[in-house]
Length: 292
Image (cartoon, rainbow, N blue to C red; front, side):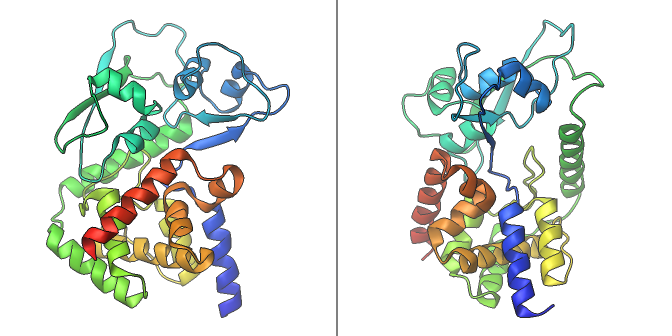
């Protein structure tokens, strides 16, 4: 593949990639209703209301609407019993990012967990919702496949030896040097994503140190003529740093590259930077000073 063709291919990939941090955002069109959108996107009206903090059914054309990432059609007779859903705070977590991930506002998470400010600590348990009995067989097939894949990858990684955080940092420094990426930026991004931990797998199947989605790894592999085993720390780091390098080249800006890594350039182009993306960029740049 010649250089020009590869450049075009990289830009197409970067525009199309859906990153682990990117929520699904749509623009409401004239005539749209919550029930129609719920049916179209295989979710429920209740889930849409919860994800967007809506008190009623009224929506307005031109406004942006968040699609819940883990919604499934509600069973006709759901079990009444619910169980609290709890997240244990990991390195790199912050309230803004967790609120985005779980479809709540920061203020909702604060109130739910009795927090006075935005400070959370590693190991802290945060309640972020409740779940009913197991979903029926009519659950959304796409999410079910992603959830099964994520569970499989967690199981595989739980049985594998993984490098120490010091060894992971060495892998990141070496990859940053190979791809001419600022070492402090690559380290900061990796810490924000996973805390230098290879066993981390997100609910949407973002894997390892750099939290790379399998689809992103395959796309990078096609463009650059190689394959990545994202369950292996060295390949995971290689894919993440390569993606960061491509984003830096494509955008010419650290801020835009970080926005692309977190939100996806396609999403940025459609709806602009989301509030949580601004916070993500701020967090990584603060961490970059630490690793400088």
